[in-house]
Length: 196
Image (cartoon, rainbow, N blue to C red; front, side, top):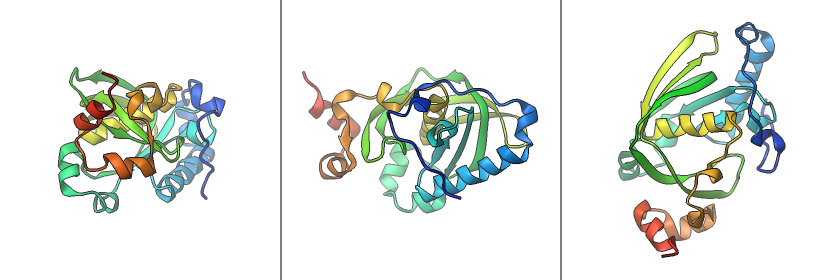
C-alpha cells in the first residue's frame, strides 16, 4: 500500500518524533507500517523514507539504495559520491554516536520537498546506533553516500530538513538543476552561485 508523502509545511516534519518502545516493534501495526513504508519509498522512488514524511511522528525510517538506482547514475558520479548499493534495512530510535570532522558537499533532494535540490554539507563518515525491525540493537558504520542518507533520515526524526543545512544560493528546481548544474563539480556550482 502506497502511503501519502507529506510536503514541507506540514507540522509533523518540524516536530521531534517519539521513540518506539521495544514492545511496539514486534507488533503487527509497526511491522505493517514498515512494509508500507518500503513500498512507498520504492514507488516514489527514493533511497530513504522517515515516518514523519508519511505524517507519523515516530523514530522509524527505512533505507535502500538498490543496484537498479545505481544503473541510472554515471560511474564517475558514483565514484565521486562514494555511492554503493545499500540493502533494505530499518532504523528505529537511531542516533549518531560519531561523525567525522571532514564534510563533503553534494546536491541533495527530499521526497518531502518534491521538485527541488540544493548543495548540503554532511559528515563523510558516521557511526549510528539503532534498533532494527526485530528490536535488536544494531551499530552501523558508514561513509560516502550511505552516510549522507543516514544523516538525512535521522534529521527527519529530529524535525530537521536539508533546507536547514543547505547552501541557500544553490537551492533550485530539479528542472534547473538538470539545465545548469548536473554534471558540473559541486565546487563550481558553489562558486558560481556565491554572492562574493
